[in-house]
Image 1: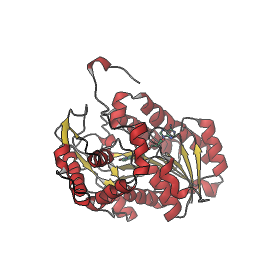
Image 2: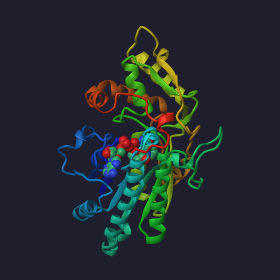
Image 3: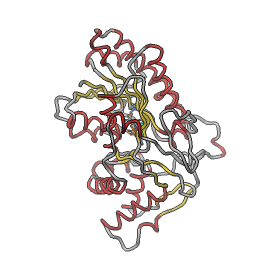
Image 4: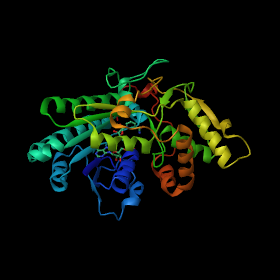
Length: 357
Ligand SMILES: NC(=O)c1ccc[n+]([C@@H]2O[C@H](COP(=O)([O-])OP(=O)(O)OC[C@H]3O[C@@H](n4cnc5c(N)ncnc54)[C@H](O)[C@@H]3O)[C@@H](O)[C@H]2O)c1
């Protein structure tokens, strides 16, 4: 299969590129703007592989997208490119609207024009897989799970921009017949995740003996999925998913943020014992504005229809991840010293209300 992956220099995108080329044997063109969240170092394993190529392109650039589509002639487009950090979306929503909404619209239109020109046999096989998040469904109470028909109720600028992009993708299927499939996945973790997100930030701060910030009371619950399990689901959805359908992907691994941080402390205490237990570094900090309380995904449809299941348990995946960050300082140290040092993002200060960066 020939696949264009957007956002392939990010966390999930780079795992997708590595898996599609090295495991599935597919040919991949990675289209990425290379924002602060991108790292071409995550793709070193593909540097010399003739089945992989890269183009620095903004998904808001219609002409560049059309050129890439015509030149590469993909059988599928896997759309991951996005602004993704909730805290950054609180500090400044404009890039989220631009990339997640305008960019997705531009990509859908470029793909529609490309698809319309394909000969009949290639038109019917073409796929556009739009990758989204469980955050579009809002916040759950203590019970229940999100399924494919759950109503949308986004509550952060990030979630709202992703919800908008989901609606666009869905509409391009209903209105124009573009063979779109949607997937909504729970929180991912694993190697090569930018160290602003909870799990890598906690691992790196704990390794460096720094405070481990936990928002609010630490009882916000997320459904964690090891990134390679998500990638395996995306490969199955691309190959066998039905156009016009949605698939929810999740690991049946609900843990509170405090439990996640404590588990990382305990794994590190075992792997690299220190004089004092690392749990002493846990520091409760002011909560994120509008912090959703609980997410949980019902992955029954993707399990039943496509035979997918998560291979990693939370503990095995977390230990792999901790070991990976310990062994790959060369990947993350330049990010910690150059791009993001671990400072707090996403707090609304009184004087800054109403500003939009
Ligand atoms: N990380 C998660 O837990 C999670 C869970 C479910 C769904 N998702 C979705 O998966 C996708 C990837 O998430 P991630 O965590 O890998 O994100 P990430 O922030 O690590 O990577 C995003 C990538 O998109 C690129 N990008 C941003 N704006 C672009 C633009 N205008 N044009 C081209 N490229 C651009 C960035 O350079 C970066 O390489 C997103 O759509 C996200 O909403 C993520």
